Length: 308
Image (cartoon, rainbow, N blue to C red; front, top):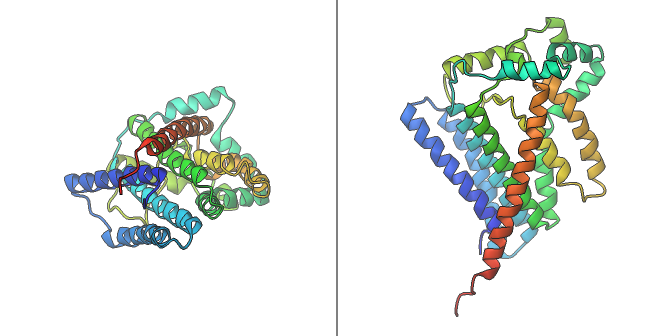
């Protein structure tokens, strides 16, 4: 068999999402940077094809696992980001006011927290690097699990991430939120001292996208749209959970992703409650992924072997 059960599930999810993207693009007659998307998709397909080649040739199942999962990860990421953008514009139906009220009850103020962190620019710089490391961390986990031959863990990781992303997009489509950066203008010196990833200009562009939608769909211009639930939190949970049994890597991933929590608040422009939402989505996605993959593996084992 060329694809393991977990890979088939991931491939089906990705293919359905890509098909939905194409339907929405043509129905709404969007302008699309086709060459930009073709470049990213070709990288994903290339990695996927490389994985299948190594499996079919019998050269290395470990390389096959890592390459196939990497290809699926790239293809799903671009399909998911595009799908999220195709849900724009959203108008004024946002829940940010509710989320900021809940934050207030918890004693959290985004402008106040950012201002406090700006008093320690070196710490702010560390948080910036941590925040920008999220995707790289996931790639490292995929490669390590693949080359270690840990197929079940790798496929749980892959399907958990896909399900969590779909859940986050579904929640956002029903209850959109852009985060406090879309509502607060921070002092220029504060943003400059922290070199903020998500600052006032980012927030202004989110507001424009919410009202008007994208001018052109392009992988070069994609912004993170979802505040609640925080998908950066989902990625942090994934990185920690799936390295927990790796004695050398786990302490590093744990330390980095403990720092990811304040990094998400400062550089991600998030409400505090977004983090709790991200943890809940991760837990639900992990549970469903484990059950789905276990059922799929059981069905595979129970299937009669083809007759010679």
